[in-house]
Length: 331
Ligand code: MRU
Image 1 (cartoon, rainbow, N blue to C red):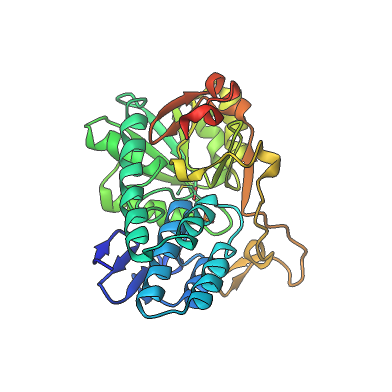
Image 2 (cartoon, rainbow, N blue to C red):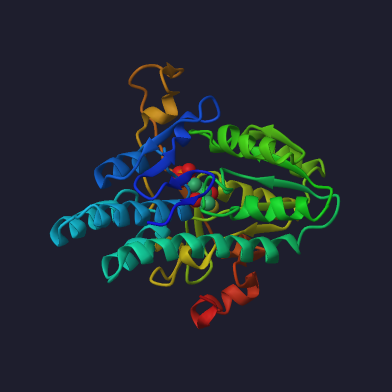
């Protein structure tokens, strides 16, 4: 492959390297992700994560595997294993379906990478236009450069508004249980010098009540044809709170996240993760040993709670989504 580089992914022409997001912000460790079995494990333990990045990284891994002389059956089974590594983010399936039939896997993976960078720019352009000078913005999980090949989805929009000189203040939800907001979004916001404050998820409603937040921007792992969408667990609660307080609520997603085969949110598969992630973190456990726990990694927000969906190609209002704009060709 031609060498490429993003915040969390690098190819030096021979080897694919991934920044281990599970170790951030304490250590910046780059791991060899060239072998498909390794990449599956990296994806499952969230060393590589974020809907768009899952597709880009899996595609680059397969291309590297092909370049190293993988046989057709080995390539096909690696493609299937990567496709099944996590169930909710449709970007992974979207990328693997492209790679499965690609006549030139290296060119296809390169195109997927470059396309993702462009899609981020489109979302940033359309989304930043919504943000007004002086706004407080609330976001959830990590949707920035770590989660994509480009500047991000929701966090890319926020970054662009900041670059445009708008005086914004970002409130980042820590995002239980794996703390993508507290570890990753906080790390990106600090690097970018964007004025920001970290809060626990349970503090968000107070910020909305107290007028500290004028807009909520989140990413998405899968948008159904009717505009319902899945995102990191906690997003649905934020949407309910935003509606109660009359605050605009925007999912931000590229076309690769739209799944017209899912008619509505009920058809989106939701990943259930190890209950141990709710009982503790790393080596630290706070709940009694054996305490039953429930750990859905994502929830579904109904289109009724969406003010507008920011896509790479433009912004669709709730009314447009409800009247079938996604299925009518905005994809
Ligand atoms: O479990 P993760 O960390 O992969 O979940 C990521 C999210 O939910 C993001 O909000 C999402 O991928 C959308 S934008 C990159």
